[in-house]
Length: 164
Picture 1 (cartoon, rainbow, N blue to C red):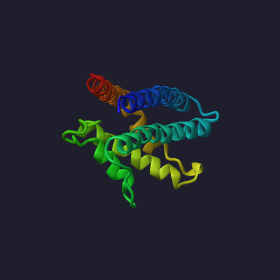
Picture 2: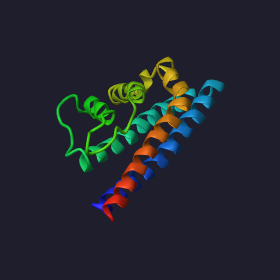
Picture 3: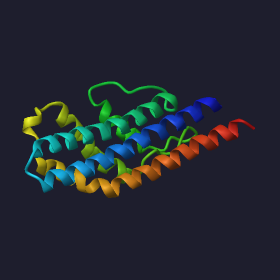
């Protein structure tokens, strides 16, 4: 079990590193899109794709946790919604919550956007619908980062306790 917890902590850490780069790209490309009329669509498409990737990366982390600690993957039509809710649950004698309730609520907007992006043409992107996600990310990302770091600390401590 020790290796399992350490491996999960490391996989989360690697995803967080990718998420860091992704959120930086979102901010950089958004700033370019609002400053220039030339190729604005290309920058907006990049922002949309990176917002999609940002939430998808988080969801990969959540799926790993559900599989490794919570007893399996979720199914059904609403599994994306349920997975996010599950990450805000403290599961006694299994694990603490991965996310605070307010973090999960804020992330639900990114989940909805990711779903929307999967179902529209890029030519139908609405910059106004992306703006609040982009402007919220600089305050949301550090909060997510702290909560994931606390969870990986829990995993490492769990591995250490089981090793005694």
